[in-house]
Length: 483
Image (cartoon, rainbow, N blue to C red; front, side):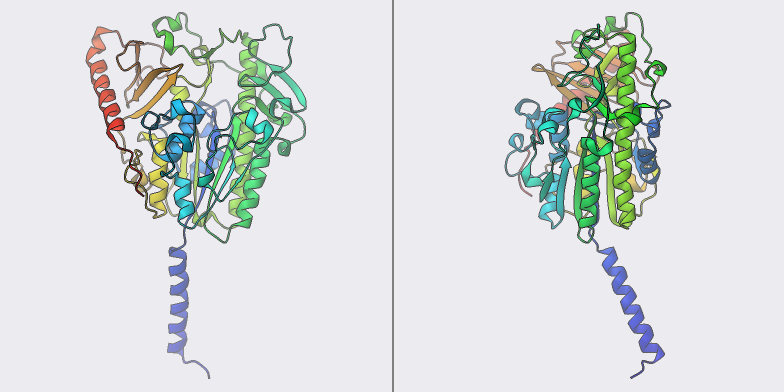
């Protein structure tokens, strides 16, 4: 029997309404991408003129770029435990006990576990919780991963510093007697075999495969790229844009260390690593090559998301576990509480939200409450991060007045309070190890320590008060386990 016009219209209206209702109630996918040891000073989206990172730049243009995001601990293991479980490192003592589940207890959930328990397919590709780079990558180990956080997990085993290709050790080797060395040292390798011979190339391929396989169900996919962590290994073509002789090193200031407390001198420096100027340039070139290789792998995963038509229902997060020194103050690597070591890139792209740049202080532990809130999931009221959801609608919203970070190097505590005007670093809670104060408006590169200048005594006291109150809040939270 033929339907009349009115009946046909009603049926069409109900069908369209049902489709729209179904789409509006789809669970959003989450694609969480985290780099290892990536500093903002090596990203063109954060203003670097020395390197071009087109895929990360493209994501930044489509999402919200956070210009003042900070790691809570500039070392891999405690930083990752903190951001995945939502507690400050000195609340869980993760800096003492290692990494992962063992420092927070069996009853607390990571944010990926919250998604898993809410019906999501959750998977880890390579390093999310701590893995030793290069050792765990070489042997294909799970490292300190948390099995409860995932339905499936995949390691991306590769040769790392043993990769075939031209290699050179650029620290502790002034005479060039050894071509390469393993462990946490700056060996550069212009590797043969292309992208898929390296861990991050394998990770990009696996992540793309998982997106295709699970596109018809809600997923939380965490992809941990290990570059630009040492060794600086990348396929040889990624080194072509960076002839080492053209690398411009940060300015060397005479007597630069004179006003820095002994504990403020980083654990790896051009001095104790016995690096010549050419070795410093080669280290920088190797780092940049590693970043461009990373950027290409990020692009592959984002392209797969686009090809599978999932962009309109997938939250994308890109960040790093902490920053990295590239010769500033003749410092190298991380651990330091100076700006280049603690500041991190952070980009969040949410379907339907306008792109922008947010200058509010944010912390990596804010990711947990933010992404679960967007997805409409319930979490513990004891999380110590703050939701930054409102900034996605209005980048002018201020979530925090300052950022907090810390380290515990060789059993000694140090803390950072970073405000819009000041960076205050304190060694020991009683200031026994010294302190640093920098005017971040007029001295962004942190050359002039004002902590002992009588003109800034009031500022120092104010920041010490902020630190004392922050530590009190962190420790008074009872870290409950109810979800």
